[in-house]
Length: 344
Image (cartoon, rainbow, N blue to C red):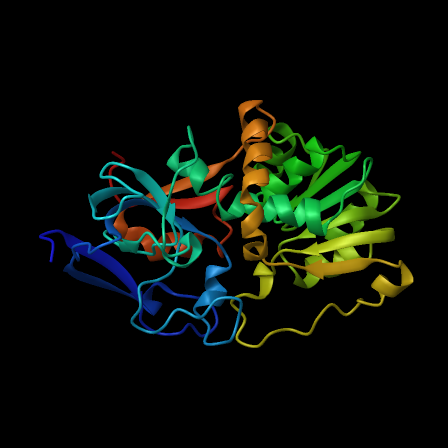
């Protein structure tokens, strides 16, 4: 055993309705020493995504649920502090799904999405590795380009546009030649950021405006591609305003993630028939064998200043659960992160 203390947040109870800080339990235990093929990592940055709410439900999904008493699953960036693996040396900065803990023990032979780790892309910061070059950027990239199948001149609508994935998807739409990009977000500050910083053509404030009417006003000929992160009433508003042969990409449904009883599906789904639209969901882990091509494009766009990766960084290991809740309180702009230790 190491003399280091591994501070952790573990799942204590499965949430009922809105997730709460009390659903997690703080634990301290000695950090383990690495064996052959393993490294000990000191995490210093933790990332949060709405999908994590689904990971703590006791239901079958694309990944096993986090078990009661287990360290909460999350993407992190850390530094290798002990190594018994040829692939990684002490001092290497790595990223992986290493959880809400300070000193994870990592098997370098495991795939990174299930507990392994890999070095950060050359020149990337921890913030970029967990946002534009992490699952967030990859989700936006493959969801928009592969599932959405954009065409030059598309009118594009993005919900949750001030969030981590939505903000990148909206910018990719602009980069790839959309004739108009409209974002839906909550509050005037976020809407102003979408138009003035990200360069969207219009922003709709779902907190103070009639979303369906505003979509019709900003997209009078209909929406060709709708990248939806929200579901519920926002999805219904989008369906009512689709163009003929439109495409809807189902990336997330944060509006219902904390509901005790799941609401019925979109009441107006027959719009898909009337307007001959296609609606398709996806999971980014299906594209892991194509990470290289995404990194080339994303890296180029960031370097050229075409893509802005906004991050919201909170601080302190004690604030990790509270930071997770920010996603469902609409407090974050861009990728939600928490720095739990000093960067090397």
